[in-house]
Length: 333
Image 1 (cartoon, rainbow, N blue to C red):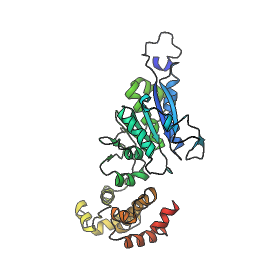
Image 2 (image 1 turned 30 degrees about the vertical axis):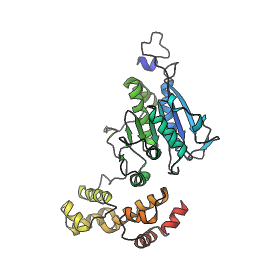
Image 3 (image 1 turned 120 degrees about the horizontal axis):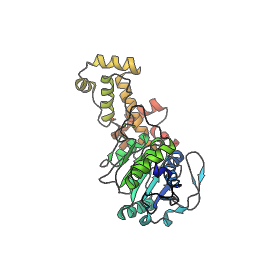
Image 4 (image 1 turned 45 degrees about the horizontal axis):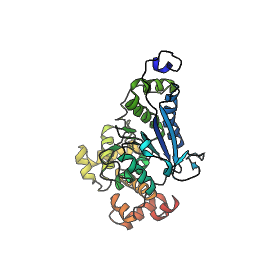
């Protein structure tokens, strides 16, 4: 309680550390809810004493304002050229649903210099894509928004992508959505300032916790089978999800789950109102749509990555399902 009340206490014994510099790099169409959730934790911590725990900075790629995903423009205090990573304790790349996932050379340069100088690096939503693009994620785990997981895995196959809502290591922090951004910042706060400060911020913000606690580092957020489905069906769906590039035959699936083909078909009809082969195809087409609309992979590469025997077959299936060709889908997005 002393920490929560130290602003008004005259004989505070809590240690007085110098403020840590935290910089948020705002990309065009960044997630405003994710940014403000993460920022809220730090601002709240600063309210607990006259000398702030953090000095906060916002940074844009260029001069001028940056438009958020909600259409609200934010005017950053710095540009990339003006930000000195040697002065930062933590540098966070703020992504969002409509952020273009493509290489940004000057951001790569900043992130590499920051990593070399021992600055911690973080990401919100799909910001970990840019950390990976800069080559600063080797030896580190990270997470990313579920919609961008397919592209990340295809582009950076050597990196370990977690299915957790957030991953917090000593030197790297990542959050997959606005909902987990606050928890990511609180975990980072615990690393630097200890449990008392983080707990005080949690209490002030009235952070809600699930009735049945689940460790943040194991909670699943990437697409996973509905927990209400029968265990056998969930196992089949997991098998399908893990084998999109080289689809399993029904015989293989039947052998893996020790069920007959007819039993499997009944499960899909009863619980998903579809056939196993149709559902498997839709999973592969969904992955194809993600790869096509978020990256620059060729149609041939997408065809192979999603387990189709030829580009002609892939294009035919894609058009039947989405009502347009793969090329048209890419142009629309």
